[in-house]
Image (cartoon, rainbow, N blue to C red; front, top):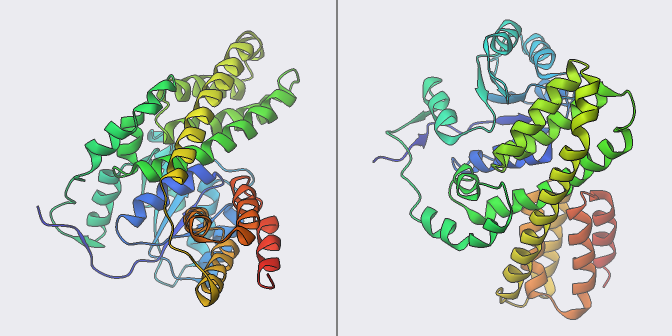
Amino acid sequence: MEENIIIRNLKVLVVDDNMVNVMVLSTILERYGIEADTAESGMEAVERVCAVPYDIILMDYLMPGMDGVETTRQVMQVSEGKNQPKIIGVSATVDEAVTKLFTDAGADCVIKKPLRIEDFEMKLKQYGFIKGEGTEGSSTGEECVDSAGFLSLVEGLNYDEGISLMAGSLDNYMKVLNVSVKNILEHYNKLEEIRDTEKLEAMSMHFHSLKGIFLNIAANKLAGYSQKMEMSAKEYKRMYIISQINEYMETVKEFHHQLKIACDYYNQKNRAKKTGVKIEGTEFIKNLNKLKESIDNYEYIEITDLLEKMLAGSNEKHTVKLQEMYDAIQNFQYDEALEILNTMYND
């Protein structure tokens, strides 16, 4: 089968407030050699469109503040008279109502979340951005699934489907799972704070975010459970929420516990097998500069890849600070990581 070929360099913007969603979409784009810009809110997306002529925008539907539909409407207004981007709405729910909201605002189409390679590829062909008969299947896909047997201990995780969503890459899937561990805990803790209150609207947003995370990592049963809780909160079915919240929270807590164990196992095993080439002198400074640039741009995958390489090849003097930076990045504390990095130029 002939490989797909991007017919020109595409400028793509991913708009989503959820880091897991951004990582999944970015991984799919990397398959085509596309390094996407990202925006965490509708307002940031509009600001970026004012500065950069994007070809494609992948627009999340539900976001705090300005949602994807209103963001689409404003993007079309600020880009009027220019080469307007193709806007692809991305939503966990794709029905006639959601599609009409997006298309009336100016979007070209809506694709179901989690975004699948074949769906995105079809749109790239439809809009004339690529040519070819299709991307050949990954020869390492089955090997990845075979080596991911430790994930079978996470009840409710369809890891072979999850790896497939990551174009057959176990490494990329594990990076998404590592971020998911953090995000699941964050939303769990926020729900714990308001579970006995009347804040059903706030609850629905956390249920929605958890649904998106579970969809992206192929924890489909939990995604369905989260969707049911989300809809009940939106419809102010308080008695149903009260009757189900304990069971739901316990299910999420146990899943998170099992997922964290699996991620810790993989991370330790992965680090142990790495035999890094020593990085010293000017090469070390070059890597620090690359790391600084990646942190400035919040490029989680690039940051963790580079830090792992540097940890494997650095001397003991630098290891402690590099590990501190790695831990900070795992908690999305980019400013703290940057402060640590700046102290290393004088070491």
